[in-house]
Amino acid sequence: MADKQQPLVILVEDNAEILDVMATLLENSGFSVVRALNGVEALSLLERYTPDIVVSDIHMPEMNGFDFYAALRNRENMQHVPFIFLTGFSDVESVVRGRELGVDDYLIKPVDARLLLSSIRGKLKRAGEIRVSTTDQIAELKNHLIQVLTHEFRTPLTLINSTTDMLADASMQFGPEEMQQFVAMIKEGGTRLQRLVESFLLASAIEAGETQKEYNARVNEYELSEIITASITDATPLATERSITIAQEIPHGCFMVRICQKHIFEILRCLLENAVKFSPAGSTVHCRITDDGISWTVSVEDHGRGIPVTELPKIVEKFYQVDRRKFEQQGIGLGLYIARSLAEMNKVVLAFDSVEGKGTTARLRFPKVVTN
Image (cartoon, rainbow, N blue to C red):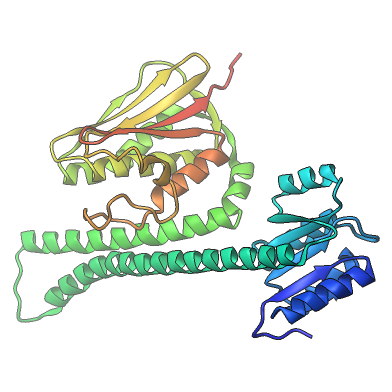
């Protein structure tokens, strides 16, 4: 009988006498125990119980320990439950196989009582520490997201509402130039909100597999330089607003690639907007194509503050932003996650180089399409 106040052990052993002895030992030591004589019986117990730890023999009828372990790990709520195997003294092959599967520990039969208890307690202690750490990380991420989302939604909404409030005030008289400025402010706020919503929707579509379906339906051969030109045109208003020049450096020639055009445009738009966002006023962002013989490489180079080497591997993670607390940034940290995901989908390699104080270069490497 399982007591919710005690750690619950699912104990799986095909020898009924050994099962009784081990179960009694555990129950007398403060554990709740549910027993099973084989893997099939143990799996049925998972419909009623959620164990804190599983201890299982390997060689059993109907379903052996390896198959039981695999079936247990396929259940979402069982992927992090500690698992200990019981095996014979000379069964080296089983030990090797189990370690490769990632089993938490091995105990050799006949099992020493003190070793069994210490192993179970140690694994439960470690699992508890991991749960606490994971909970803390999730709480920190939630707090970060709440702060970022509050800022990202509130800032453009405040801009739009305050502007429309002034325009709605009948006592106020505005000239044509002022009206144009107000319209531009409203448009800026609306565009920022639109990009925010689009990022969420696109990230959701990636995780739901919708963009993979889109790739499968739309993949074709396209001229890469045309996509680059279109993405630069899209980023130019933001660059102009920030007094930044985008220099397009594309040699004459044909640059055919097999991709989903919409995805590559989205990637380049993200890379160009990031380059503009983190570049100082008056600087130039360079967008160029180079040829290494087997692939085309599109690079987007800025002369901004750069990214610390230790941060580079993290910048494509969802919701990650470098020094958000130190520097004002627009966005929620989905752009490069989206870019990385779409690049992988299109079989394009996305990589970054950066030097603090000098700038960052993003590179997209496309396999060439061989033309006859």
